[in-house]
Length: 408
Image 1 (cartoon, rainbow, N blue to C red):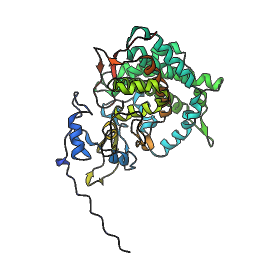
Image 2 (cartoon, rainbow, N blue to C red):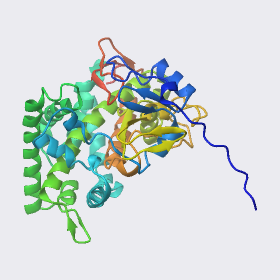
Image 3 (cartoon, rainbow, N blue to C red):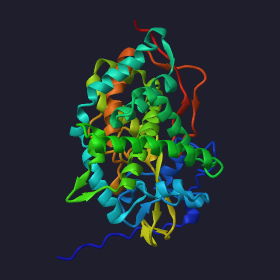
Image 4 (cartoon, rainbow, N blue to C red):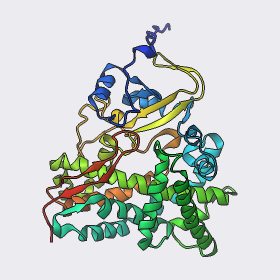
C-alpha cells in the first residue's frame, strides 16, 4: 500500500522570528510581546538564543536528547572557578548520561511519596502555627511571616536541623541565590562563605545519621544505596546542600506567586477555603499559570533541524514554561481554574531526564499550606508596598503585604 507523502515543514529563518529582549531588566514573560510572538509562531529570537513559546514544542524539546541542561556552564561564563564551581558541576541538574542516571537512582528512594507522606501532619501543624501569628490582625508581610519560615522549617524538618535555626537556613540560601544574578562574580566571596556554612550543616547531618541512623528522610538519604552502589561523601554533601538551597528558594517563591494568583481570582480562593481537597489541584494550577521557574534552559549538543528551524550546536534554548502553560493551542480554556480536569502536565518542575527530583516535597508542602491559608485568610488582597523580582528567569516576591478579614 502506497502512503501519501506528508508536506515538509516549511523552512524557518532566524531573521524572520519575533525578537524578545529577555536581557532587559523590565522584560516580562507575561508581556504582550510574548503573547504576540506565541501567536505568530512556536519560537522567537532572544539575545541568548532561542525562546520556545508553545506547549507542544516545549514538551518535545524538554525531552530531546540532542539538548543538554543549559545552566552547566554558568560559572565559566562568569569567570568563576573554585569550590562553588565544583559544587555547581556536581549538581544532579547539571549532570548528563550515566553519571546523572546513577545519582538519580540512588537519591530517588528518599524522595518517594510513601517516604514523605508521614510528614504531612507536621506540615499542617507548622502552617497553622505560622498563621496563628497574624490571623487576628487581618494583615501580614507574607514573605517574612509565612513563606520564608515555612519553606526553611520544612527543609529543617526533612534534614533534622533544629527548627529554630531556620533564619540561618534562609540567610545562607538567599546569599547562595546571588549566584543566579548578574553580580555573581562580584558577590563570590559572600556566596562561598555561605556555601561553606551550608556544607558544615550537611557534614554534621551526615556524621550524625551515619553514626545514629533513624527512621527519617535524612537517614534514607545518607544511607542511600542500590545494587551495591553508594553515594560518595562528596556526592551526598553536594546533593544535600542543593536540597537545602533549592527546597527553600523555590518553595518560598512559589508560595508568594500562589497568593498573588489567588488574590487575582477571589472566587477560586473562596472555593479552596470551602474545599481543602482541591489543595493538590491548586498547586498544579498555580504552577501552570505562574511558575517560579518561568523558563528552563537547554543547550544544543549538535546541529539539528526542528520544525523547519536549523539549530546549531552550542545554541541556548529557553523553554518558556509559563508561556507553554497558558498556550491556547494546548488548553481550550487556559484561565486559572482549580476545578479543571484533564489538563496536560505543566513544566513548573521541568521535565524529561531533568524533571525535579524534589517535586513530591514541593507539591506536598504547598498542597497542605494553601487550603489552610485560604480558610484562615478570607477576602484576600494584596496591600501596598509589594516588591517583586523581575518576571523572568526565576521569579517571586521580595516583599508581599497581604490584607484579609481578621480571624480569631
